[in-house]
Image (tube, rainbow, N blue to C red; front, side, top):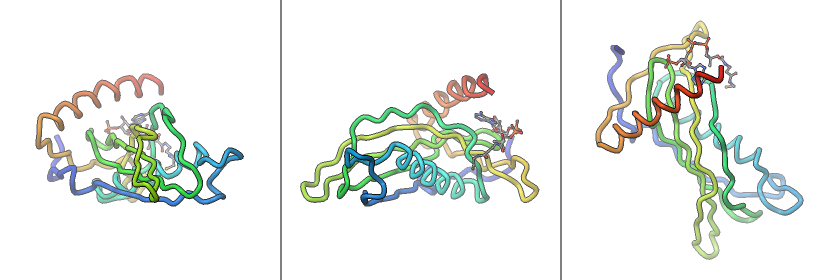
Length: 156
Ligand SMILES: CC(C)(COP(=O)(O)OP(=O)(O)OC[C@H]1O[C@@H](n2cnc3c(N)ncnc32)[C@H](O)[C@@H]1OP(=O)(O)O)[C@@H](O)C(=O)NCCC(=O)NCCS
């Protein structure tokens, strides 16, 4: 049982907005999958560190399904939020969407879960504040994350 005070999910929600430039794109003029993955990792890392109050490392990233591309001149929007906490690790959900600023259209691009571990000053996993479960949705997300965690740990 953690002695740290619980923190609300809203306290660490992290939003990022990226303008897709030619250096982010492949020969088809759409953003590289690896570039999206880098932005996902950064957005999730900021969210994890806001929640933990200390530096965190990426331990695991679940499958990524790219649903629809984003082109040069369009915008990538990312939102990361803590969905579950364990002792030293937490599951962060990242939602990525495309946006055409000239039409206002937005579309889902990627949804994924990443697991981050908080690190102490001597580089050991460090306890984190539990997530405050404020709704039945929060409780369901924590329970679903516990299932996913079991399968991630089985892959070690
Ligand atoms: C992540 C890391 C710190 C875990 O270290 P470890 O020696 O396995 O430590 P532990 O066994 O005590 O596990 C620590 C926590 O990580 C979690 N964890 C470890 N491997 C995991 C995995 N593959 N998936 C999900 N969680 C994992 C454990 O469940 C534990 O969480 P808990 O305390 O909430 O139960 C270590 O594997 C590491 O440093 N990996 C490299 C990280 C990295 O370089 N990332 C990319 C750059 S940021």
